Each structure stands twice: as C-alpha cells, then as structure tokens.
Length: 377
Ligand SMILES: [Zn+2]
Ligand SMILES: [Zn+2]
Image (cartoon, rainbow, N blue to C red; front, side, top):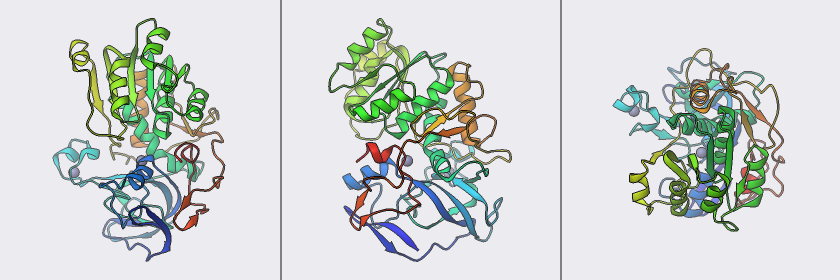
C-alpha cells in the first residue's frame, strides 16, 4: 500500500510499504480521511522525541472496515467507522476508573503504533465507533479533534461562564470556541498572532478578537470586560507566554485550561494563582469511552460557520456547564441526540498550494485539509 512515511528526521516521503496485518482484536481499515494534527507538524519540525522515525503518523481518521482480525468485535466488514486516537490497556486503575486517556500503557496512533497517513491502518475494534451514512469522511476525521475540544469543556467547573477567552486559533482553538458557543457562553474572545486565524475565529462567533503583536491583550480584555476579566481561558498554544497570559486574563476564582503543548517550562505569577484562587487544569486527548450502542454523530440542522465543524448541543440555550457536559458525553459516547457536527466550506481540496514534502506534492484524496492547511504552514 502507499503510505506517507516519516522515514528519518526531517523527511516525509510517499512509499510503498506492506499493508498492516490485524493482531488479535484488531481490524484493518481502508482510510477514508485523515486529519493533519498540529502536533504532528510540530513533531516533524522540532524532531520531537515523542514521535521518532521511522513512523507512519496520523491519529485523526475514519475509514471502512476491510478485514477482521481474530477476536475483533462489534464491527463487520464494510462498516464505516471513526477511531479514538488513544488505545488504553483497559486493565489498569486509570482505565477501570474510566480515565482511559490517562492510562500509563496507552498507545497512540502515529506515535506508538502506525497511524493513518496510509491507505490502510490496523486498529483495535474496541476504539472504533460507527459513522452513520449521513456523516461524511471529512466530518468523521474531525471527530477526534472535536472530541478534544469537548473534553476541554468537560473539565471546566466554573458555573455559568459568560466570558470565555481562547488563546490560539488553530483547529483545536477554533473547535473549543465553537463548543463554548454551543454551550451558551455569552462572550467569546479569541487571541492569535495570525490575522487569518482571527478572521476564522470571528466567523465562528468570537467578538472581539485580539492580536498580541498589535495589542496588549490583557489590557484590552480588562477594557472590554470593564475589569471583570474572563471566567474561563483556554490556552490552545502552550507556550510560556500564552500560559502566563491565560493566568493574567482569568478572573479571581476563574479557570484556565491548558491544552497546547508548544513548550514545557513555564514561569507563572504564582501570587495571582494563590490569592485569586485561579485554577489551572491540563487537558489531554479524550476518554476512549466512545462505545455505546446508540452512538452516532449526525449532520447539523443548519450549516453555519465557515470554519471546520460547528458543534450544536441540543440544549443550545442552556448555560455552558450543563450543555458542555452533555456535549462531552455526546462526543465521547457518540450519542446522536447530544452532538452534531457541521461543515462549511473552509478549505479547498486538494489544498492549493499543496503541502510539500520530501517526495513532492501530496494530492491523495485521503488527506483532509481542514483549516490547518491555511494556518499551519
Ligand atoms: Zn491531534
Ligand atoms: Zn490502562
């Protein structure tokens, strides 16, 4: 089969490689669509030790079941499915407590096992969930990053957050904005250094948007909230400067969620955290509890939003915590009645200009552009 192989540091090349063989409990999927995660672009660009070549990347995908390994269950050949990126051991304390994404023995597609930048990928049947006919492959591949954004909101404990700031408007940040909007946040504020991303954030409901290359974003927030600051700040970048800004932008008793992983060591205003009882929570991936008999993800009643997926909680008018939890459960369990995703027309496909790798232009129809083609290069 053809695969995009991360064959050596700085080298991605399209190669013919042997197709995957299903281990016990696995199925082989024919990949229909796969997203390019910012973490993967950054891993390649920075020679990340978390993803070392040789490796096939790709953890946001969906496809059609082509072959069943021994012991694969609840799927059959021909099923259209999406996958969780995290494969938990299923036996440890974390897994038994339902925190499968924190499993110390977890595997990740495109990290500890081959990912989906290929025509086929082997995946345990236990991390798959079926896609209804009406959910297309692009939406299917977006479910994993969307679920990440929903997981962020599932961790927020502030009651009735009204002002929500999202720092970093890549795919996760844009999805987090839309989940917050769906959950009923009244004011969404987006922060990014890239004007094109800010325009996308505005298009999905952020108003105002701040660009720290032109503005003092903390002062701007203070002005626009008359000193109240934000109830919740999501840092979807993870640089020292954005983590610090997140703490400076949240009100006393407010909550910061870090999901970005750009940097590591971070200096913070500790007094502000202590004296203001500001909470900082890390958010990682999603739980793998997708499996439920009546799960599904359905297309939206309306197709608002030019950027990627829009999320619509059924209780759209409900305040954030309730709806966000409902949405979180909906995505994690894939329940049809809680969550829908929608697409506008955010990208050209194939991307123009195409992504350039060591082997030249990539034009496969298994590539999903999402907003990242426009924003990550
Ligand atoms: Zn990802
Ligand atoms: Zn485990």
